[in-house]
Amino acid sequence: STTPVTVTVTGAAGQIGYALLFRIASGQLLGADVPVKLNLLEIPQGMKAAEGTAMELDDCAFPLLAGIDIHDDAAAAFDGVNVGLLVGARPRGAGMERGDLLAANGGIFGPQGAAINAGAADDVRILVVGNPANTNALIASAHAPDVPAERFNAMMRLDHNRALAQLAAKTGSSVAEVKRVAIWGNHSAKQYPDIAHATIAGRPAPEVVGDSAWVTDTFIPTVAKRGAAIIEARGASSAASAANAAIEHVHDWVNGTPEGDWTSVAMPSDGSYGVPEGLISSFPAVSRDGRWEIVQGLDIAADARAGIDVSVAELAEERDAVKEFGLL
Ligand code: NAI
Image (tube, rainbow, N blue to C red; front, side, top):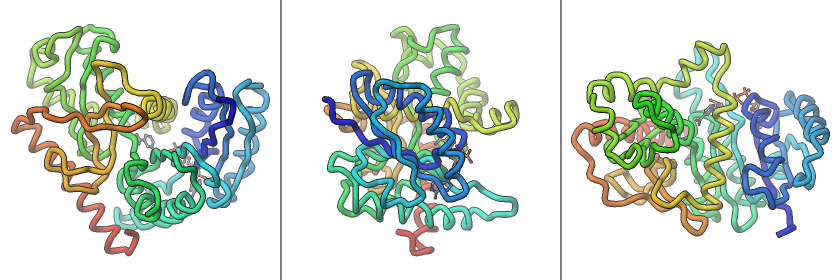
């Protein structure tokens, strides 16, 4: 098709935005034959930097880039949006309580949800990256009653990819040989990375690893706390790997997941695996015909059950807190 797909990126002048926009414009988000129109949304203080990024996008002369508009108004930025990447968020400031953080982000994602409701295209897909991503997605979705809830995802793909990399390194395998890893629950240190159903070069991952203490004591905490480790090492948070994960998430959502594998997606629960309906929680999922389906029928052992329950309880607490603030 030659009609450009409208992609809206919020927080466009931030670190992730800078790593993300060039890849979208080069065709990696949707495919090398799909023209894209970029709408960048920033706060007024970010507009000048966003204009600079737009100048660089121009200077790449990407054949697929059909245009760029920069906005500090959500209604304009989401008008006609097909794919929305909600990256801009309020970071936790010094002395800020968890409740303050949820409330500050509710003030961003509520109005953005309303703007999506008012202006989005019928096929809109929204991926929330800005933290706390799962609850921000829930708030945006609650303010977009005319958009099917399943069109609001939160990003777990970075956690998923981190798990693939750790497993490959531990077993001396290539990441391409590692399949069917799952991340459950919240994008937080309480997520539950799960290798029980994973395979490495076709063999059960727990057997190839052969070290259940490593899984519990090293693998799970390494994946769950990788973001902090990156900040410690780099002096700045994960940006290129987060942008990469966002690209892969949307690409698979639109184009499908590879046969025989799955990925991890935070989407509204339908009650699968005992996760309360409506919470935006991570599940193993495949994409078919442009829709995510939760992988069904996996045996959940006691340790996994406990890990999932802890993470889901955190999501329920976040939901209850934002409900109390009147954000849902
Ligand atoms: P950054 O601070 O470099 O950029 C954020 C940008 O968002 C800034 O340019 C800011 O002006 C803009 N912004 C703030 N409020 C906005 C609003 N209401 N509308 C539009 N733009 C707004 O941060 P960075 O590194 O790009 O990270 C962005 C978010 O992504 C953070 O919340 C971070 O915690 C999260 N993140 C999520 C990951 C995930 O796996 N889900 C992984 C890594 C980061």
